[in-house]
Image (cartoon, rainbow, N blue to C red; front, side, top):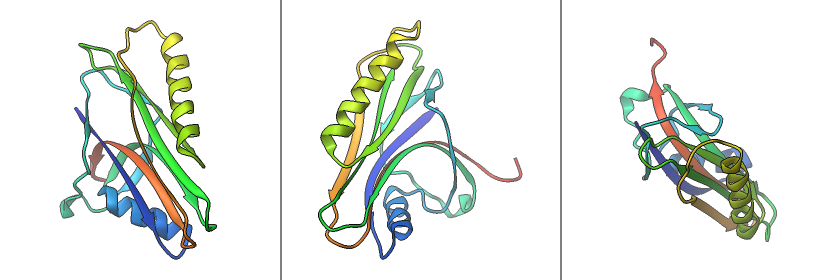
Length: 157
């Protein structure tokens, strides 16, 4: 199984329109997003790659782990990040999704959360990875988004 991690910043006339713009930039705009908890199944390979949304999958369910943060006031910042760790060999692992108003806060929370989760499980996880994106609002609403796309599924399944 491949899990694609993409990050994007979208802008629009409203926070929801900015979120939609970020979804488009990440390549997942035409799916119904199904949020998952943060467990990476054995055998998974993580790729940092924009998702491809083929027309034949329009309206499909897409299973995701997602972090997003919006800002609407000039000068405010929006940051989103996913952190993950995987066990060598098996590929099983953990995701954490964090958002906030500064890159440093998101980075620190990703590391602290992953270290706590790793400590309380009986597995030998590897190093921590992360993908973080953010921007400063200039007056038009923006959305920072990092999304891990697991798999899509049609409604007839």
